[in-house]
Structure formats: C-alpha cells, structure tokens
Image 1 (cartoon, protein in one colour):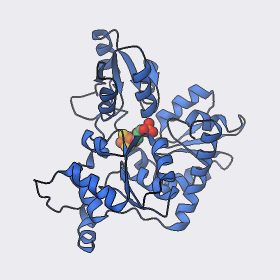
Image 2 (tube, helix red, strand yellow; image 1 turned 135 degrees about the vertical axis):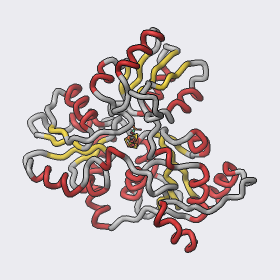
Image 3 (cartoon, helix red, strand yellow; image 1 turned 90 degrees about the vertical axis):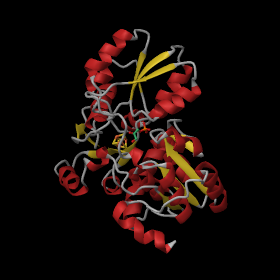
Length: 333
Ligand code: 13P
Ligand code: SF4
C-alpha cells in the first residue's frame, strides 16, 4: 500500500500498469466484496463506471447514500467536492476518489479567502451555498442546497431575510425567478452548462419539433427560458421515463444519456449542442475518472480524502441543516 502513496502525489492517481488480460469489471466486483466497499457514482461518469456502481445518483441522493452506508469504504466515482461531502457526513469511513484532480469549475469559482471577504461585506445576509463548493465554502455557509432541493431550502428561510447565494449565478438567477426572492449572487458558473448554444438548440428544435428540451438549472437563463423541463440529473432522468414523449434534447453533461437510453430504450435522446464543435458538454473533471483508475484506487486504497476535524465539523453544520429541511419537505426518507 505504501508504494502507491508515493506515486500519487504528482498526478493525483496511480499510474501503475495493469495487466491487459484482467477483467476489470470482475476485479472491481471482487474488491467491493473483499473490502466491504460501496461504489457510488454520479450520472456524469463514463458508462463503464456507471455499470459497475452500486448506486448512481444526483448530488442529494449520493450525499444521503454516503451518510447512510454501513460499508467500510466509500469509493466515490465523481468529483472532489462530492467525495469531500461523503467524508463530511460519514467521517468514520475511508473515502476514496479515483483521481484526486477531478475538480469542478464551479467549486473553483469560489476561493474561500475572497468569498469570506465578500460575506463580511454583507453581514445581514445568510449564506446558502450550492453543494458544488469546497469544504471551506461549506464551512462559511448557513445552509447547503443541491439542484433538487434548492427551492425548498430557499422557501424555508423567512421572506424578509436577505440571502447571499453561492457559487452558481445561473442556478441563483433561476431560483430568484422561481421563488420571487432577490438573492445576492456570487459570480460563479459551471464550464459545461454555460457552453450550450441557444441558436443551435433552436435549430435542433426546428428539425425535431416533437422533441422536448430537458435542462439542468446550471444552464444559462436563455436556455432555461426555452426548456420544457428543468431539474437535477435525477429529476431529468425520472421525467424522461414517465413523460409520454419519445424525443428529447438534453442540456446537461452527456453522461446522463447512458441511463436515459438504458431506462427508455425506445426513446431518442439528443445531446444539446455546445457553441463550437468541441466535446465541451463532457465535463473534463468528471471524465478524469476511468475504469482503470477506479480499479487501482480500490486495490491500493488511494487516493483517500482527508480532512481536518475542525473544518469537517464546520462544514457539516450547513449540510445537516440541508438534510433536516429536505427530510421535512419529504424530499428524502
Ligand atoms: P445534480 O446531479 O445534483 O443535478 O448536479 C449536477 C452537477 O453538475 C454535478 O456536478
Ligand atoms: Fe462541476 Fe460543471 Fe463538471 Fe458538474 S459538470 S462537476 S458543476 S464543472
């Protein structure tokens, strides 16, 4: 195990060569049993990783699963803030992330030092932060929210209480519209959800007049304005399963199409086009995790998420508040 630890520091993952004859799916299943490990994956992970996961979910579902598990090891196939959240909620477990460099542009858009100064300029505001932020930002917040509970979280705060919302300005603007609040917004955004082209989506809608546009609330206002349904990844997926239409344009990261197609094999799902011809609707952070890195991470039990206890306790407070409000609203069991 120690050999692995030294090799991880530079690259953020183990670069040990793997025997190409190994059946990685079978190996990962074996490691799960042997180590009593649970594999949690976000919908933006590559299809192979989703297929081998024990649970796939949105940020709220994953956080709840991480909190409730009695496994000894939580392997988080997602990005750093998600694995960090698992550690905040369930510190007794070993939490592993296949690539330590799997970050998030949204979380990066709120550096703790600058955010703290901003917060201090608005002492009358309470801070509601989207879960896509670092543990340091969580520790500076009063309540955390995800895309699936944000509306309820905001509604739980009295109407005359000023709110500072961070770090996603698009989600914040969408929530201001939905709730009629005038939250002060931090100027952050997700590099993936900002890239969708309204012009190309409009053209696509003309070519596929029956197709419904499904959008994640991290998208820009102009895209959300023409969406037929807006929700978290789980909510979008569920909508696509129960809605009677057969064609959808999907304005979120492409990984979700794997579950959509699997759960509704006779429906058509078209990824919403980005502004240029890049693959920018693939999240480069999420896609840093691969089946190979996942296997090595489980085998050698690195990289592991570590957190200083004072920071963890401070970050847990607003997470607990989120869970309480979500439970009271019937969003989680
Ligand atoms: P949800 O899966 O909670 O909707 O979040 C989407 C996202 O951007 C995660 O990084
Ligand atoms: Fe962050 Fe956006 Fe990637 Fe989600 S899709 S992890 S918000 S950069």
